[in-house]
Image (cartoon, rainbow, N blue to C red):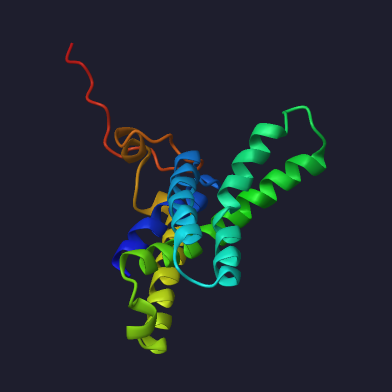
Amino acid sequence: MVGMAAVAWWPAFTLGAWGDIFFDDILGLWAASTAAFVFVLVERRPVGGRLARALVLLLPTVWLVLNFTISGETTDLAVALVDLAALAAVLLGIPFTLWVLVRVVWPDFASQTRRRTKWLIAGVVLGIALASFVLGLHQAHFLTCEDFAISGNSEPHGCTPDPSPDPSPVE
């Protein structure tokens, strides 16, 4: 649960603060989902369940392929398809990839964990993601533009300038 929340907070915050999920988050998701995809293909389970999970794990790859194949001079429909694939990759890909990775690292998780505990974990991670999104929307209340600049991030629209006055040179 802690690891899942740690992974989910930053994309949710950036969506709130900048109105976008950064490419490095999507490419990180792509890397994890591709590794999980390979694992799902070679695991010893019935083929039907594996193929369904493998297809969901391919969502970030579909987004990446669409970005390579659709040029900047395409129709609005093509751009909408890329945006839809990106949204699906994030909204479905992140939680599903995390779930598969938990099952890879802890194979007995599904059988040894009560349903109530699984729902608690999902609720906490979703709650952290939603809270992070809201924090991103309201970042101007507790962060300054300088906080973003010092961390190496661009300043989001509406950030609060640093309240401390610049020291004036002594004449």
